Image (cartoon, rainbow, N blue to C red; front, top):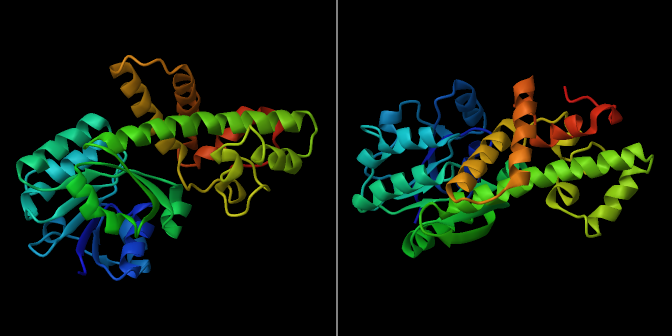
Length: 304
């Protein structure tokens, strides 16, 4: 079966995800409110629908959304003549946005009331993962909805995890990204210290990759240039995952922690550091550029 997929939100992540679906032979039609993103979609030969009202019809079998915040998901799904008003009961809904758990559950409940299968399926892996279809995808929803979505998800990601009922995907993603934000700061501090100790950074990096201090920011996504090719730190911190988005996710994590009466002191500190970084005008840089702040005058590389 060649699904007819409506893909809403083709930004830095959504665009390559939609391209992977198209390249796999799926019929994909995309929409975005940003003219810049639409122009990029056209450059990538995606089928663009500029009128949201014409995007979804009776033949649409899957709707995928990749949106910045919960308010955008709520508007797209729940507004009058939004997604839930337009799709048939046989249409599968996949929200890949990273949003607050309550909003995810609210949209899922409304879909369930209409007899429509829906999952929340936020992703991890950045633009590189989206381009290579190696994303980690964390899914919340019923077993039936997960099994129905799995063939589509496998075209966009490598590791697909069913975390539980609707909202669990975003819960897992929020926990993951809190850890990621903390460990990126830790990796920056460690490498900054090595620099101040006048130890060869490449040697320290190689040691840490193979020792107990290893982490994803060390082994895959180092915050300093000259260590791994193809990373944002080697491309003037052009974002694979922006500091602004990390700041948003850390806010979500801290809100969840407060609601659950959980103690997350490092998560709170990471939020403070990233919030200040974004307030200083760095929100559009990759989140690994936080190393410039952590390193202070120890670094001699630009982030512009």
